[in-house]
Amino acid sequence: MALTPQEGEVAFDAPGANKPCKTWYKIYGDVSSHQGPALVGLHGGPGTGHEYLSPLIDINGKYSIPVVFYDQVGCGRSTHFREKYGDTTFWTFELFIKELDNLLDHLQLREKGFYLLGQSWGGMLGGAYAALKPKGLRKLVLASAPASIPLMLKGERELLAALPEPVRTTLEECDKKGDHESDEFETAAKEFYGRHVCRLDPYPDDVLYAFKNLKDDPSAYHTM
Image (cartoon, rainbow, N blue to C red):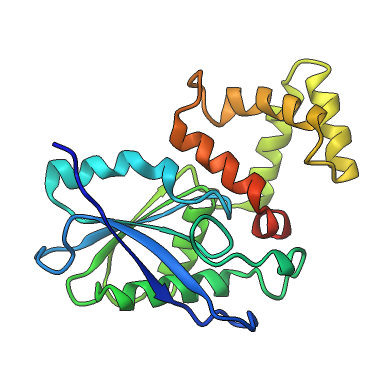
C-alpha cells in the first residue's frame, strides 16, 4: 500500500538572511493523532536534500511512527542563499539548529517527543543539537557521522591513498586548485563515491537527487 505524504512549508527567520525564508517539509503519517514520538530525518551535506533518506519511510509503514523529512535551507525546496557562498558568518551550526527548532515547534513535536536520525553532516547537526538538551528529544541515532573532524580527515586521506592512479592524483590536484566542477574531477570523484559512498550500480534515483542538489547549489557545502 502506497503511503501518501503531507507536504508543507514553515516561515523561518534565518539570521542575517535579509529576505523572507522558508523550510519545506514532508511527513509520512499523522503527527497530530499519533500518541508517541515522531522521527525527524537530518540529511547530509550540508546541501544534499532529504530524498536519499527515503528508506526511513518503511518505519512509518511497519511501526506507524510518523516520519518527518525536510530540506535544510540552502538546498532542495527550501530557501536558497547562493549570495552567501563563502560567508562563514552565515553558514553556521547555529543557523541549522535554529531552523530545526523552528520546524519542531511548528509541528508541535515537543510534548509527545521526537527522535532524530542524522546521517553524515546530519549526524553532526544532530549531535550538536542533542548537546543542548532540547525539550522533547527522546532518542538520537547517528549514521555514518564523524565524532572528530581530524580523525575524519585522516580516514579520508587513507581512503584517497588507496585509490588507483591516476584517480588519486587527479583528486589531489583538483582539490589543491579548488576545482570541484571540471569533468576530470567528476570522473575521478565517481570512482571514490563508487567505493566509499554508494556501491550500488546504477545509483538509486534518490541518491542521484543528493548529487543533483549539491551540484545545483553547493553554497553551504563548499563554505562549511
